[in-house]
Image 1 (cartoon, rainbow, N blue to C red):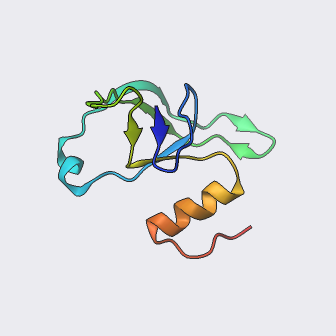
Image 2: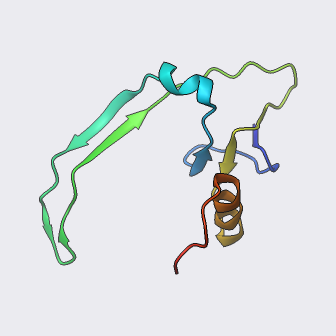
Length: 93
């Protein structure tokens, strides 16, 4: 399975999903983990968080599907591409 620019998608990859408008109201997620945060660390208290999981069936006529709405985030060049695709201005470093 590959993303829209040809990167192989593997388990545990970080990906950006440019969700098509017609899917936004149909998405259902499974809650994997919930934390109220507030645990003290040297950097300050941890924030609350919710971790979600989603299963997406892929319908493809090809042996290796290409997910045209996904981009793997792997390096600074990928982040610049994601910003360009999302229409976001320059990233602060």
